[in-house]
Length: 278
Ligand SMILES: NC(=O)c1ccc[n+]([C@@H]2O[C@H](COP(=O)([O-])OP(=O)(O)OC[C@H]3O[C@@H](n4cnc5c(N)ncnc54)[C@H](OP(=O)(O)O)[C@@H]3O)[C@@H](O)[C@H]2O)c1
Image (cartoon, rainbow, N blue to C red; front, side, top):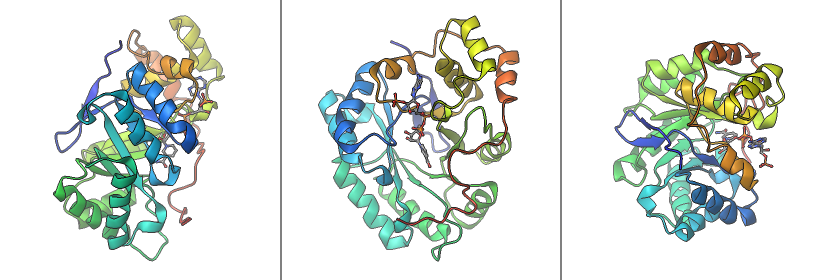
């Protein structure tokens, strides 16, 4: 079985650099699919209140027979719950739905800079949760440099991670550098751009030279950049393929060729203007 490297977060907690994402996995399929990922060897699962499938994640961890302490589980606060008391209640509901007594990582899913509740208030709620030990680490998602800088200036705990959209068409060199400057680990969401980058000739060319697939080359690019990734798939063969990244290496030249594919193309919304509340 492949050995997945770990990254040390700024509070000393270790996170497996490769995990499994469950966005868009239907709730009724989540237990079975997550269990397949745990069987393949993944020990890090990324879910969110918004995905509606936390229950299946909790069931899969229990059904796997693994110790809870052997699986790193992340969830994220939904957009409607940014007010302090709502955030605490929503966190409690996540634990209940998952059937856990703690989360390894809990994130503010979106900064929502245009809503009435300032994300600084939301973060203060997460700081309180962290101090109780029920979230072993806390972080943010989709925070732009200005959001991150303000949070760090106005609150006490520096986020452990910033989970942002990153793939070869959105390499995010600047935001990753801001994260690194503040000791915040970058997590790359939609790491293979939901499949969009897989027929790019630069990537398929490197893949055929390496005897690996395009998805493996892109995921390996993330790993060598030092980002944390959690590709999603409901397909067993792809779940296995995406875990098989540790028997080859990309040269500096190939790393550079992939980074140069950046064209600032987002799949998701722009965090500066996204203020959606369900
Ligand atoms: N914080 C946020 O705002 C945010 C936003 C989006 C995502 N995320 C997180 O990031 C995770 C990953 O992102 P994502 O799910 O958007 O996209 P992704 O992992 O980049 O891509 C998933 C898509 O690619 C397909 N796929 C997976 N492996 C493949 C392979 N080896 N070859 C060909 N196709 C493959 C999957 O198809 P099948 O499933 O049909 O196999 C699925 O359609 C999410 O699950 C979630 O945990 C976070």
